[in-house]
Image (cartoon, rainbow, N blue to C red; front, side, top):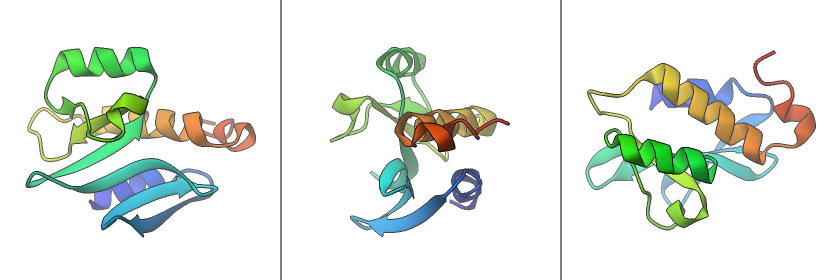
Length: 111
């Protein structure tokens, strides 16, 4: 949880808020990552484009189709998976942030 927290909170104006018993990471009240225990494993869900969602699902583990938000273009990541790449997770978190953040803030990412 500490790694995902550090990645999320490094983004402009990002903050953590507990919601539905899970850690949500937000910018201007909009959720860009949710981290929780899902079926006995630590997971994170984040917004991606539909095309990227399909590509990640085709890869399989550590990616999965999350309940409730999968239909809205979110992807789930098993944070305990042996195949997990933290650099890929960081990229996905940044992308999710940029999809929900105001343009001014999104423009600051990666500078």
